[in-house]
Amino acid sequence: MAVKSQPRGARGTIGHPYSALNLRLLLATFGLVVCTVLGVLTARAGHPAPAVVLFALAAAAAVDVVVVQLRRAARRREQPGVRHSLFE
Image (cartoon, rainbow, N blue to C red; front, top):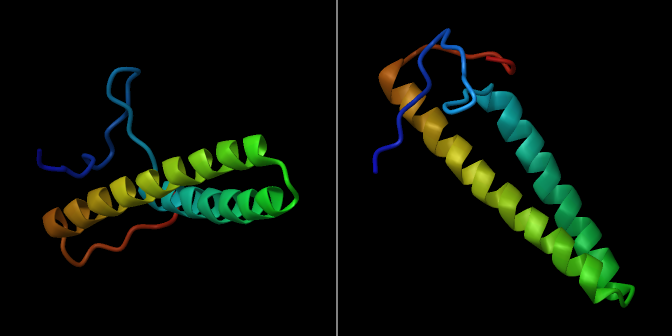
């Protein structure tokens, strides 16, 4: 399955949403770091159940980082030389 970039200026719908990729990458990276650190600290404190939840959230954030990077790469292939702002 090929990953396509989002059409410029397109509005999302409930069935086919679009998001700001750079901002989404920033938030997913923040979530990955925070959930990983808190998961390690929680596990070391002897609370395995919350640690498992935090590690699951960290894994979801890692998957989101990969998906966003694939979409950003597709956008770079389709629009070479165009710089996008954080909220675009």
